[in-house]
Length: 171
Image (cartoon, rainbow, N blue to C red; front, side, top):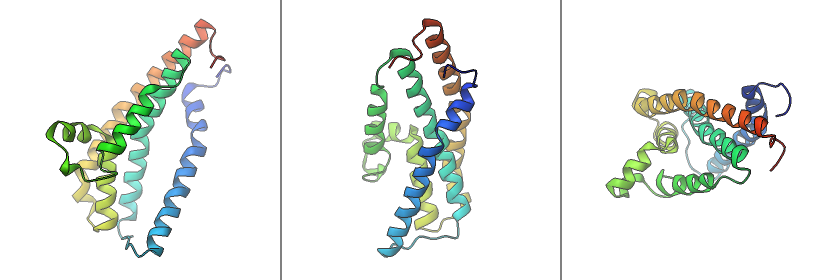
């Protein structure tokens, strides 16, 4: 961070391992599912990969904002824990979003993971077409298109603040 490396380059290169690890985890989970007899439709593999990439980009927004928080305040980001909990509880990971009360369903709809999970399930478990999940794809695309530049801008502000304050190396 103290080098003249551009902020976006630093962020992209530092995220390679977690992304590769997540891809390997997903492949293992799909393999275990196949062994256990869950039939995964591969006919929409390209659509599923698109959803995964858009979901990754959308969730990267929160990771970058969390890193900006940590740079400025020099402590762990409480928002990451809260967002992770809300995501697990509301986005359809543990139970369908259709059972949520209207207010919580609205919050669930705003989470990118809700759209990514919905689209992935439709594409891989029910063999839906990519056009059937178009709304989810559009939401994820819009979220990433707006959120990534905004979060990168916030991270850049945080780096500049830490450099001016002389606290870049402190954590």
